[in-house]
Length: 372
Image 1 (cartoon, helix red, strand yellow):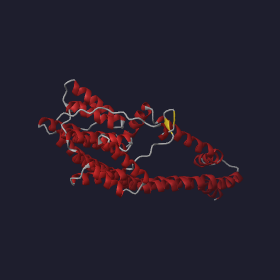
Image 2 (cartoon, rainbow, N blue to C red; image 1 turned 90 degrees about the vertical axis):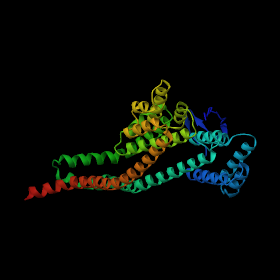
Image 3 (tube, rainbow, N blue to C red; image 1 turned 180 degrees about the vertical axis):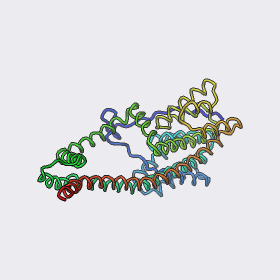
């Protein structure tokens, strides 16, 4: 079945947002991932039970405790009663992102809304799981890093100046390492406010430039070059692409149209560019596996499975297999990231503290040697 999905534009009320240029000061309130996972799970369960959409929303609204969330669901229900589709009603209330909107459109137009709701539920459950894994992997290292910053700052601003007063009494030449640490300490004591100002300014500048396409593209390219972490991000984005493409190919959506739709859902610029170039290549008569290979983003495993899927006309199966494999790789890499970051940060912190202590005691050792 060929599915044609038009891009709809929704009117945005000025009262919901206050903007300064392209910088959004107050963001629209949105559903959190946990709320979305619960909503789509309940919606899938109720519709699968044979209930109509109106009764389903009556139940969802009755069991919702948050006032804002309840009002939004009531608004969606009223829009549906007025003749709007579920996808459009969710989009108009700013409750559905691009992924949910196009997925719901596919489900409604293909008559597979229950399957689509199940896939959306799985998507958010997996996303929440990965966030928890990343959070668990980074919590301890962040605490160690924060402790290190406080400890090093205390040593440079309090301990080193105390040693400097002692060294000034000797009136001799200090070892180069000691002199360098003292120079850093003096700079930190006098210009620590400047460092805070620079960091704050950099944070604001990044936030302002984030809406610029060229800056986002540059930043995403930098992320891909970070060892281990870059590969992890690439696998996460590839898994998301495969998940969406499996849904679209199962709905028999035309391949080029599916790729353009996925491109609208993806925000990671390198993958977005690869999808666009792939769609353009297919439009010129090239095979899908040749196009993804030439895009430069996907690995050899991806190309091989896509080629096999094309040859036996089972692209949906290939995308599902790739999605599962990428998610397994993500879990493995997250566990490696957690196990590597902790000892590396401990060694880094210990090394910095050791260098400062050695630099402070080195003149005392030399003095003792000269006395004997």
